[in-house]
Structures are given as structure tokens and as C-alpha cells.
Image (tube, rainbow, N blue to C red):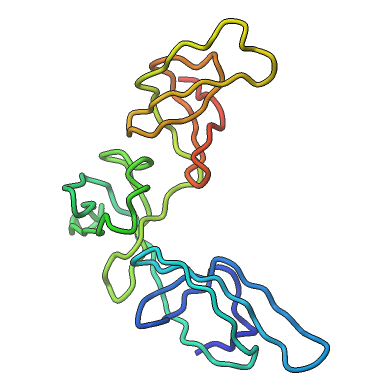
Length: 187
């Protein structure tokens, strides 16, 4: 158990019998009355966002969530399939609630999985991912006033806005949180 006033961003809590991670935390100490904490929580199973207010002395149930490295094998329409590189044990994570992750994981790539009660519940993506451009349209001539961009499709199907000089076959670095182009990667 943890006091609400001691909770920080990244703390794992059990709410509604599901694991949640604290995404935002705001401590408020009004002139009158007792201090309280505003929390924004995200379910690690469904992806649902929950906002709640707790008195700072209130006790909440914190949980241990472990992370393990695993190799991404494939997706079958309902689940992502992974393998532990040390024990060769295979795990599945439901695609539901994690649909956007398919744009940032490639077969054979090693990723971090979150485990709760010895079950995988979340895929932790790296902040930046290297992807190869599969389709790149031509930029419009004369469209170079300031920061001209075009849309390209990368190997996972994600569409990203990039500078005009990016062409098919280039490797680019993409931010996995904002889905934005970061830079071209030299081979």
C-alpha cells in the first residue's frame, strides 16, 4: 500500500482489479481543507485512461510490474507473439488496446514486455525506432518555402511526414510516441 501523496509518475497501481500506470500526477495544497492528489492513470490491459482525485493521506494499492526482454515473432490478428530469449518460452499480448504498436515492431526485433502476475500485459516501445521507407511520393517543385514535407509509407504501414529529400529505401528515425520523423539514418 502507498500513500496517495507519495505516488509519482510511473508508479503502478491496482484499480478496479487491473494494473494501471500513473501518467500524470499533480499535488494540490489548497488554503483551506486537506491536500489532495490529481492522478491520470492508464490501464496496462485495455489502454483506458482514468482520472481521479485522492486525499493525500489516502492509501492505494501499489503493485510490482516486471519487465523482460523478448523477441517479437509475429501477429495473428488477435495477439502479438513473443519469445523469451533465455528460456525460449513464448508469450502472447492481445492486440486489442495495443493496435498502434504494430507500426513500431518488426519481426525478429527485441522489445521489453511488462509482466504482472506472471502474464505479459504491455509492450514497451523504444522512444525512437529505425524504419525503412517503402513508398515515397515526389515532392512538388517550388514547394520549398520553409520546411517543405511529403508523406511516405514505412515498412510497417505507418504514414509519416518527412522532408522532401527522403526517398524510397532510406532508413528514418521515427518517434514512437508522436509518430513524427526525427532524422534520416545513414547506412
